[in-house]
Structure formats: C-alpha cells, structure tokens
Length: 230
Image (tube, rainbow, N blue to C red; front, side):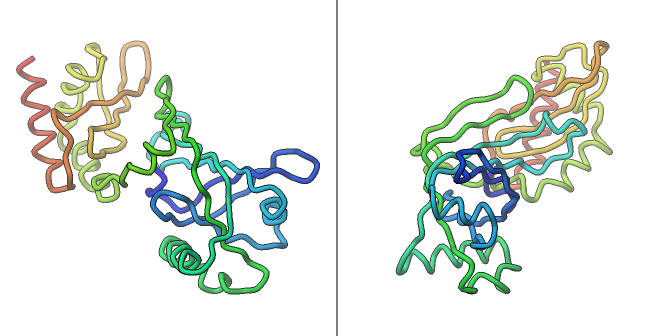
C-alpha cells in the first residue's frame, strides 16, 4: 500500500500538544517514507520540535464505500539524513514526486526520513492487523496491482458469472447474486458482492501467489475451474 501511491496524511505534534494532520507527498527508501517539508508549514515546524509522527496511507481503489478500501498507519520518528543517506533520500523523494524538483533544494525546505517503528493495517470491514517494523522492512511492493486495471475491467465486463461463482465457492458468500472485482494483487481478488441481504466486501485468494501480471489470467481461470467443480 505504501508503494501504491505518493500521498498521505501526516500527523505531527504542535507546540501546544495537539495532533496536527497535514496532506503530504512522499517517496520510499526501503519502505521508510521520505518527506520534503517547508519550514513555513505548521507541520514543518512541528517536525523540527518533536520528531514523533504517524503517516496514514490510503490505497488507491474503486470501492464506492471508502471504508471498504485498504489503508495503513505507519508510526515512528523522523530524522534529517546526512551524507550519502541524504542523497539517497532526496533521489527517492524525487522519483516518487517529480514536481518536488522545483523546491526540494530551497533553503526553507527540509528532507525528512521517517523510521517506521510499527504498522497498523486495515483491509476493509472486519479485516485488520498489526505488523512489526521488521516485518514491514522485509515486505516488498506488490508486482501485480499497479498493472491490474485492464484485467479487472476485463473480468467485470466479460466474466461476471465466473466472478460470482468464485465468490460463492471461496469468498464466503454462497448466496452471492452478483460479484464485482474491485482490485487484484499477488494473492487474490478484492470483491464487492451483492447478496439478498445487501452489498458486502470479501476476498478470493488464488490457489497460490503469483509474481507478475502475466500470471493473473491463468490464476483466475484456475479459480473458476475449481469453483465450478465445487
């Protein structure tokens, strides 16, 4: 999720102790966010005085209900990188936020590297968990989701029956009336399902993880075959 976007909400602490939420952009160094913040901004002054922060990242999604989408909160401390680390941080921010080239080197801007200490993940209604800093550092960006939009549209346009059958067999909704794919990643499909009792959200996992968008078709074909056998 952190690698799927370059925008987030930063929570810093004001001098009076109140939490202060600010819209920010960021890049990543090994999963750690890199911010470029103006001293004139309130959150810029907050970071200079108190390095405790959290960052709320919402994964891009197509769900009509925002609370059904995935999001994470990263908590930790920020510091000013120096030497070679400063160059690495600067490059990481520019790679994610090209427009920052117009201001990143101004004297009133500071590049901050956030060291992530803990992570809270929410995958939608009733789906949540925590992760340690070590687990987060060892994770890698999803290779499937960034290029999955066309495949998701194709599934919904041409394979609506297959999606309903997958959801009925493996998504926990045997009474599914219809199912719409809202996202695909290396592990499975996000599904919005219509039941006689209303709309719900679920996941349908592949039989095994995939490592590229080229494997998505075969994974969904295999799911369909197994759903129809069951």
